[in-house]
Length: 123
Image (cartoon, rainbow, N blue to C red):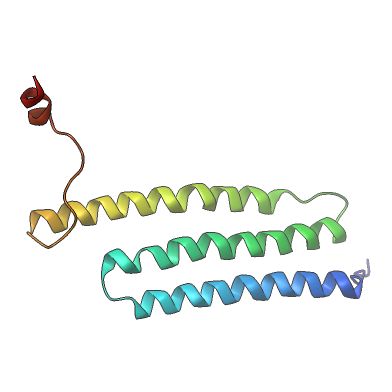
């Protein structure tokens, strides 16, 4: 079986999407290196990983849909998994770091959650 060649315009579109995903991932790495505190650094890879993954997913979806027999949705499932898990994991990591920073007395924003004691004082 000989591999079929993509039309030039489609080859360029897939290449641009892959390069855009790689460039976005590189920018996230630079943000990770340049930002000073953990609370600043945690956003760069989380946001960039999701955006870069979506660019790569679109390139994969187009390439394998054209080269294969039909619509290739496996890439979409991977991107959806990343889009759901990365922000949730990021929230848990931020909350743990914020809790730890408050326990050690670092200068962080105050806790805005209500406690059981606050509820008793209201009545």
